[in-house]
Image (cartoon, rainbow, N blue to C red; front, side, top):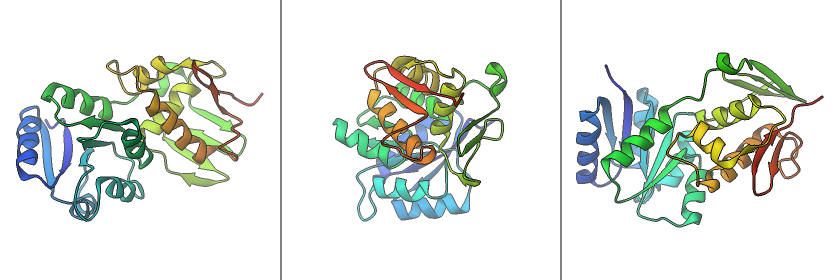
Length: 230
């Protein structure tokens, strides 16, 4: 049984071949694309569970391709790059990526990142939270649906999982490490830039004034808290 359908997007055929061999051996179904434009065509024509997307490609960059994918899909995207500065990471995450891995990387690290991207947070039944309302925002967790002023808003899987975990612990400050490990997995804990980007993305979608949030609050140097209306 397939572990999932992964689309590998990279202009280097040798690199694609190595990834195909590695992932196929672990039970993943693989498709390939040589460019961002080809990746968009493949995504439109077939269902995929995850995209491995190289940042440095000619014509359409990986960041541009990621932004285009995000217009119609919430599936996990892991960006691949040789650059490792915080600005590079933030640029990739801002574009809609769920994770970021720097070349060269080992098979174990890649497989761990893929498992983390594909995992779901604890089910709604575990914590009992099913629906909440934040002013004009209605969130239904079993259906993974968010409406703002009666209009449906698209959240990526990781954005939704982050919101769900905070809603499962209402009015309580959750530390950076706990959030990262709950949403991304036990191998995470120091990637605070991930949380900054994802919280900002969520605020833009659910807060009327993202720069002055009413519900999704920052506790400086500690973590984040979802304040429910009284």
